[in-house]
Image 1 (spheres, rainbow, N blue to C red):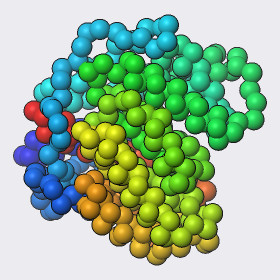
Image 2 (image 1 turned 90 degrees about the vertical axis):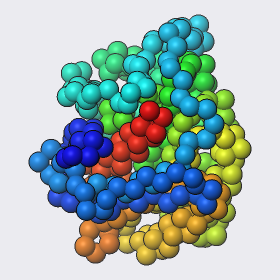
Image 3 (image 1 turned 180 degrees about the vertical axis):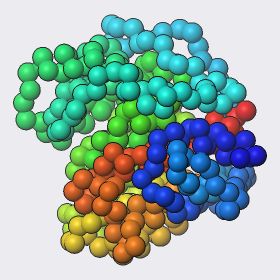
Image 4 (image 1 turned 135 degrees about the vertical axis):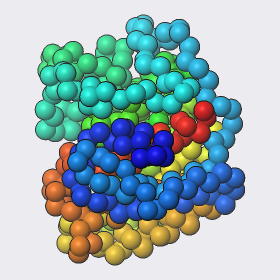
Amino acid sequence: MRDPYLLAAGLLTGLAIPASALPHLSIVLPESSRFLWNLKQSSQAMVSTKIIKSVDLSLPELSGQAFQPLKSSQPTVGEKNVPSVPEFSSQGLPAPTESSLNPSAQATGISLTSGNQLYYQRLAALKTGQIYTRVDSDNLQSLWESIKKRQLTYDDWKSLLTLEARAIAQGQGANHLSILVGDSLSMWFPREKLPAGKLWLNQGISGDTSSGVLKRLGAFSATRPDVIYIMAGINDLRKGASDETILRNYRRIVRRLRQTHPHAQIIVQSILPTRLPKLSNSRIRHINIQLTVIAKQEGANYLNIYSWFTDMEGNLRPELTTDGLHLSQEGYDVWRTALQQIEYKLTQREN
């Protein structure tokens, strides 16, 4: 633990990961990369009582201006004030505590069992002038239960995500922001597992395809993210789309994001494996290889976490999924580990 990064990574990944050893995590750089940060592949970081191989993160130098200190002002969302957010220190992430690693530990959590419940929880948060990733669970429960509920449509979700993005754009100030873009895998990312110290905007919609994602990128065009994480494509495969269609949409997504957010790090995440017989994991691996090429050509990063989720047969590990496709809490712990280490490394870049 002599390497200060390994010590910090061990602290940041405080939740026990279900695997005794995770495979190597790699991130592929765009051709124009000027900055390489390589960790020794033999290094290991302690996570709870389990040992996880430390990741090999090679990220390009951040574009544009350096991160600015947080402002003390409180911008408004509509007619309500947005509460101030924790400071994102220029000296790195704050020292983690049990509550910061698991923000919901001291609050009565809401057990969400459907997309409708998640939708109305988030809508209730907006009615308080906040984003659901920032509001206390106890306050949300009484609010979302009081809303008259109805059958939701894809357009309902697009409208909600647009409202949340607008709220973030108005209230971001100088605070740091990361955005998750994708389908239900991103949509159901537990808010309490998102890395602490910054704002998060979740732009995932259940059942969405790469084509749907491409068409709704404008919803958050007014925000100023530091990092944009993309994961889509599994629903394309379920609906019979060709590899060419998926890859063409990905290239357009990256280009559109690069134009709209020139100073953001764009990270294309590998499509995850499944346990569904009708979805070929060999085909997913082939698409992921092509996504590596597209990311490099279009000036984005490629984050390969596919092998973190596979068993000996190359399928999605059963303990990491609820139904062969969607992730369990343990599955999100694995994904969270990758995001934490990337977020930490990007933060250290500016120190």
